[in-house]
Image (cartoon, rainbow, N blue to C red; front, side, top):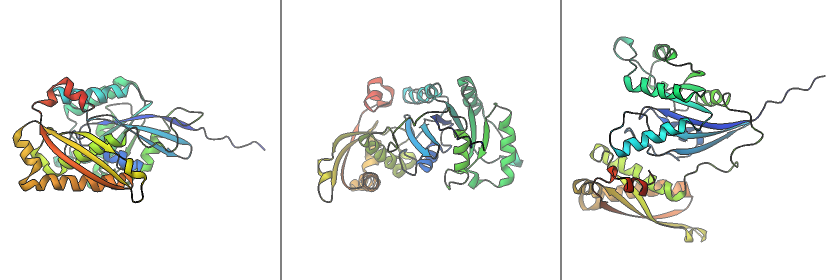
Length: 310
């Protein structure tokens, strides 16, 4: 009796790309089961490439969450788009995200910027899966017109509707990507590796996330965060404590006033929410100290971009 052929182990890198605010970071967090990529309702929240490693029986997928693809204006936005585009050449497969839903009278409008993003995916010459996100917000009847509208724009390896928010069909999406990964004798990363983001960098991102969430539209893209102190010497003690001092940098005095708030109320709220998230992440108590500084036009200077890891 012939022995059953063993399914080969697969491992590789996948770039998650798409227009700003289509749910790339929400999807990465959903797949990993951890909050490694910050999320806000505002586009272009993700500024750098973030690695997230996902292990399933028979496969390991190393996802790269990337900044949103858009026609960039300004040094910061250009750097973000360059990061996303350069990632396309370094991966084994691409996951292109779009949103479910149709316009008036059931029409599907594929904008110029989205077509440009798809052209960049085509230029990479990698197997590409189209993920139709936010199916939880769209009636099932509207999914087919969206799929039909995008089907002819690229030779997609697969098209999978899903919801990063609820998790519906995410497993199907991951399996579609795994089928496009190369066979491998071993995983690319040890089983306990979740991300390439150091805890210090994650702390800065957790603070920036709360600045964006709490100030809403009042602080557009002007905020950056630098961790000046990350002291975990007390983490080994009973009860454990990590001391973090972070600097929130904005571009104008008016933005500084908004971040601080009346009698420091906004800064206290930002700090409390960020600390709560960091305590869940680090598994110990956190003492978080925040200060705010004005650095005019930092987002347009090469040195400042490098300083903030951009």
